[in-house]
Length: 360
Image (cartoon, rainbow, N blue to C red; front, side, top):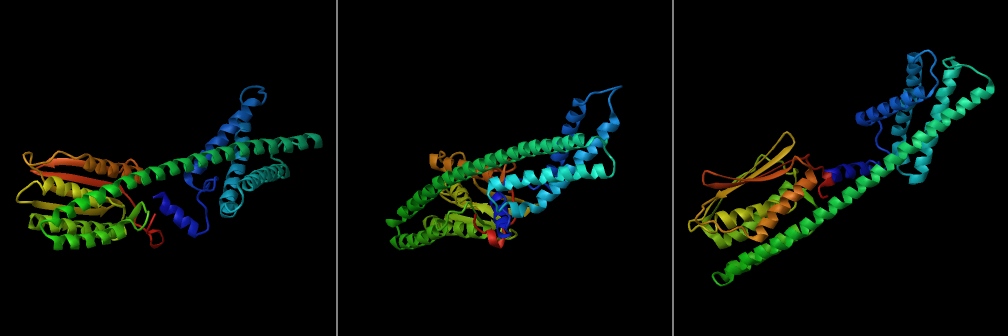
């Protein structure tokens, strides 16, 4: 779903790939506050101690540093959309300059209200220089960390997209070969139906191969699967019975392209085709609490079941790998045999697609 968020951010003029994160977010603020407090302890412990640990000094330094951190976070958060449009080096330099400037301003405020020890002008200048250098070093280190983290995330995203593309490329030829096999079985027995099936197949591949999207709308995936079933209906005739229970699913729920069709193909190959009387394939889907659940069941008979082919096994493995890559560890593809039926259940958390991000 990261692709959806990037599309929305680009439409609003904000580049999510900018290496400085959104420092107004609670997690980022908490991290900054903890790092700042750690720096405070280091600075206080590095000072000479006379008569025990100075807790008052710790409180004053902590207040001073935390004000600088919070003001810097607020300033960078507000300027982030503008900084994101600048070259990386210039944006980083301006961020450092801003933090140093706020540090010097806070130091001047403490002097104005006599919150720090007053000394000779040379000592005051040294204190300003020391605060500026500490702020510069810490901001450079933190920005460098943000930059490396952003580079790592982009590398992970590129590897993920390459993996998804490879899985998608495996499924599409598998889809084509099995559809052609279904049509080939009609050529000798019913040429008229075979001709119509070829026309349906051309429409089917125009819809499925027209784009390179990883995610499509449920409505589009459902239409593609129904086109496939119309081809299989020519071959199986009345032996194929379908029970659809998907009316409650919104049209814009996202689903990886070519997910429903391989699951239906698996149900037909192992649950309907081997049986003389055919069988009923049930397709149930639900979308509750931001989670999409799809269940497909078919008759299961130990005596008539076919051995699992390498192609079918590969398609199911690819579907499981794709949903895990796209939706994270909560996504799952499971199979179960009970009451003479074989159930394949697919589930993953997702948000509904926006009009601007219908293809990813």
